[in-house]
Length: 84
Image 1: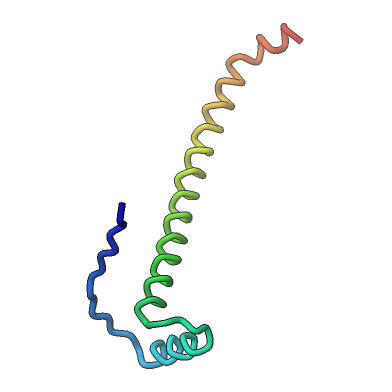
Image 2: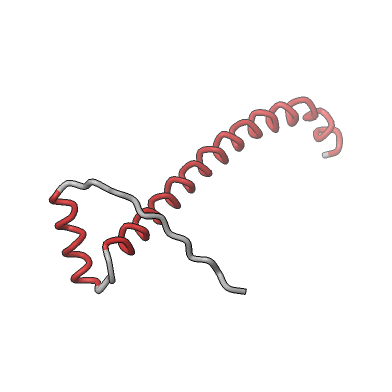
């Protein structure tokens, strides 16, 4: 089965200094095009944002569970004292 590789053309405006830096990196790294560079940069940045969001969500979940777990432990502490 063939994988479709659809692309969309976007018009992007960047400062001259940014374009110059990209062009220097392209020449040094042997990257084939600005589009390939910007695609890779966008994918990496989006991935970093997603990981940061996931960390925030997990952290808030950990905190919520920690409070709940401490409450349950306190409610049942008499049982663990009897068993021990």
